[in-house]
Image (cartoon, rainbow, N blue to C red; front, side, top):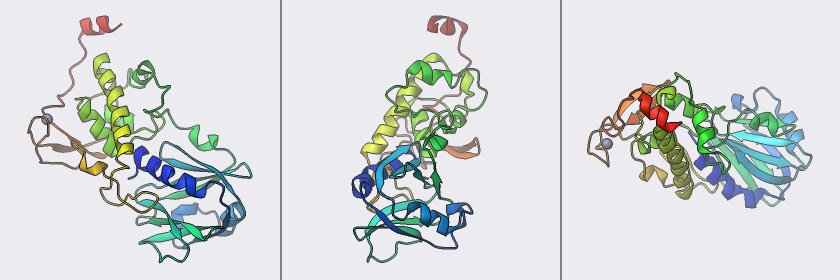
Length: 286
Ligand SMILES: [Zn+2]
């Protein structure tokens, strides 16, 4: 599933191509039921055709196309969505479900094997991004603010990181990688993490997301960038989908379990089970 680094890579690819361009038509495969959530194609076409794209932004895993009438076309790739730029005459993409036709002979092609991706028109971007927490890479997110999201919580730390209302943009790949980098077991109750562990996690979340962007995303299965090319981050992962393979740090086989309903990968030696923070540690921390 595309996460912040994958969606950001697509945004960076597509922004210079679509900004200032005018949409002339929209085509959607009628079998693609989730995409429009029951909104008739004619309604979507009326919202998009003739509109010029002012900007392409991103928050969390959402792509935000700002239209010249002040409204927003918001796309979410969900599990297997792809959005690539192609000449109008190019053959259809594999699993192509929809296309947005532009005034310069190019399309945005929407492919989606599993068909869970969504397109919505919103009167304001706030309707979408207002529900999201800060991104771990936000320059303004302090370590103290980051720590507060975990205080007193009994949910596994992994579940807190995946909750887009707490932090936007992280998904299964980057959470497993960040928890490995911070040497934290994914099922640790969030409220039991020491101040030092949360400091490591704060830095690890930023680090794994920035590396993911630098490597243009992770192409384990379906993800491609805005030109249809794979990213390279999957070649650099430490634990994700490395079950049974030796940990790069200590040689112990990577284990797989289910945490918060999600397949989870960790090193049982580098990521020790939680111990409750010692009273004296808590005192020092304050
Ligand atoms: Zn290890």
